[in-house]
Amino acid sequence: MTAAATPTGPRVVVVTGGSRGLGAGIVQAYLDAGDIVATCARSITAEVEAWQSDPETADRFLFGTADLARSADAEVFVKAVIEKWGRIDVLINNAGVARDGILGLFSDDDIDTVVDLNIKGTIYMSRLVSRRMLAKGSGSIVNISSIVGLSGYRGLAVYSASKAALDGLTRALARELGSRGITVNSIASGYLRTEMSHGLDEGQLKQIERRTPAGRLGYPEDIARVCQFLTDPAGSYLTGQVIVVDGGLTS
Ligand code: NAP
Image 1 (cartoon, rainbow, N blue to C red):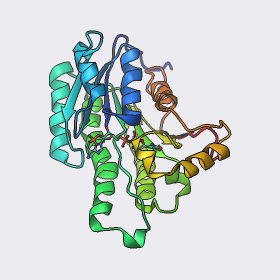
Image 2 (image 1 turned 90 degrees about the vertical axis):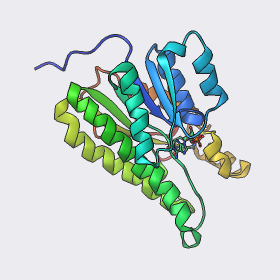
Image 3 (image 1 turned 135 degrees about the vertical axis):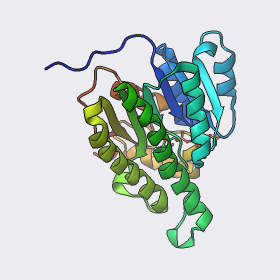
């Protein structure tokens, strides 16, 4: 028995939260590879404007304003991608938010912000996109989780819970979709220098660097490269896994 035929030509890739930070690095990597990329966020950034105006990328890039904590926004965004390109081959569920603090002092709002985007937003997008992938019998989904979903982190209880939930979603969806030609994996990312890590002070960041065998924090490209590997159309036998990409920090 052989693996399913590998489609050729540019793929249609959806990256949530690609306006900055890790998501922007993932968008750039797929654009550099010649793929068509759609991304969304609540607000536009200079990176998005550059992709929209660059003749190299303008025709194969789409930005949608969407708050993925709202299922209706996710639906409008996915519909726009389907109307423009007719299919989605790859979904990278990257948009996420962190709130730090001792759980006993968390407000309802803080809990809802993290759960509504990190868990519910990812589930809304996976539901919408997997429907289309099922219809065409192929596709790859990657959920961006975190090493704190595996090991926990003081002051990040809700965020850690949300990332562990994504790993559970990954395993269940891989079972649900595997026989239909769709792979689902998580990347448990280590610490990256993005806006999200601004909550950590320089001392904490230096300590993480010292404890990391690779001797540095991660760059978006480190994670983007693994996304591309996991979504390679020839990689249909790798599914249901949580791949830790953290420079060896948790080894
Ligand atoms: P970031 O710099 O804060 O970027 C987050 C992205 O998500 C932005 O594009 C943001 O745009 C978008 N976003 C936020 N809320 C949204 C919403 N309600 N609806 C739609 N889009 C929304 O974060 P990052 O560090 O790149 O993190 C990206 C992913 O990596 C997250 O899932 C995070 O948990 C994970 N991660 C990060 C680290 C790290 O050290 N940075 C480590 C492990 C895992 P708008 O604000 O304009 O909506």
